[in-house]
Amino acid sequence: MRFNSKFEYKNYLGNQRIAIIQKAHHKTHTLIQFINNELIDKKIIEWNNEYTSDIRDPYSEDNIRKLLINYNIKASDADLRRILKHSLVTRSLTSEAEALKVIRNVSEDLTRLEVERIVKNLDYAENVLANADVQINKYKSLIEKLPRHTSRKEILEKCITEDKPLPSNRRQALLERALERGSNYKGRQYTYKELNQLSRDLERYKTHRLDYETARLENIQADREGYGVINEEKSWIWSTLEKTRHQGMDGETVPFTAKFEVVNEVTGDVDYLLFPGDVTNDHNNCSNICNCGCTYEIIKA
Ligand SMILES: [Zn+2]
Image 1 (cartoon, rainbow, N blue to C red):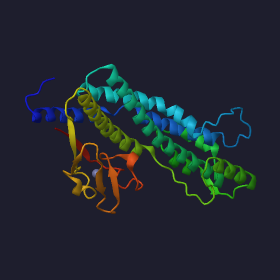
Image 2: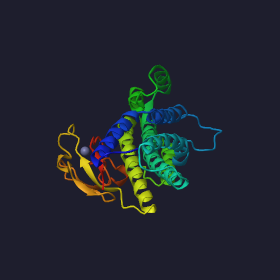
Image 3: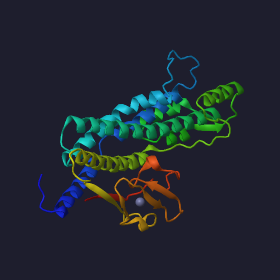
Image 4: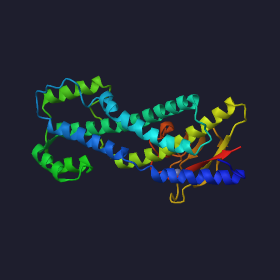
């Protein structure tokens, strides 16, 4: 593809980006919500079964990870291919191998965050079952009647008749399992983490990350071919919808591989992020990440 000026080229890429974000609403996160709900349903329905023939623990992090990783690989692959089509990366065995590595890494990061949340939700359900009287039959009939994506927290709360003390043998078993997993059961706070908002944040993260990785691949290729760096800097673009948090970040420009120093203007929390929504570099419990609508622009040399 040929461009008459740097400006024309930048404009072209900018428009592509917007088209990509709009197209990115595929079904992966709906699927992940369903997996979360199905695991919780299974756990609740089987709660009173003393004997189970299944030796594998379907709720272990490792097994949930196995369920999710392929969906994420497929989605990341489709998204990256779409971005690469409009990039300066030429198709070659080397760039193909590099693209596969990118897909792997991005999918693994997304999966880790999703598994973490699903495990927390299972812990929450287990805690409710252990500490309250849950009408399992009512739960069963509600999940059949309500849409598949309905929050399990909402349904579970409708089925609680009363708080009950936990029988000591059950508490002991739970404690042992929690210790096995490396967590402390006693005194731990359990909250149900809805997946919808996380999915939206992760979708944005994925688009920003894949943009970043594509620009990185362009730089690697340019270097290999003996040219200078193509993508030199990046600028933060503040979302005007977000009234308070990142207004001061607008137009902030740093070298392409550097991190932005991001200050939450409400809380004062500081994070060092590669781009807006960079959840893998979050150190303040989502303070600068969750619900952030900011974007960024990669600046060509
Ligand atoms: Zn923001």
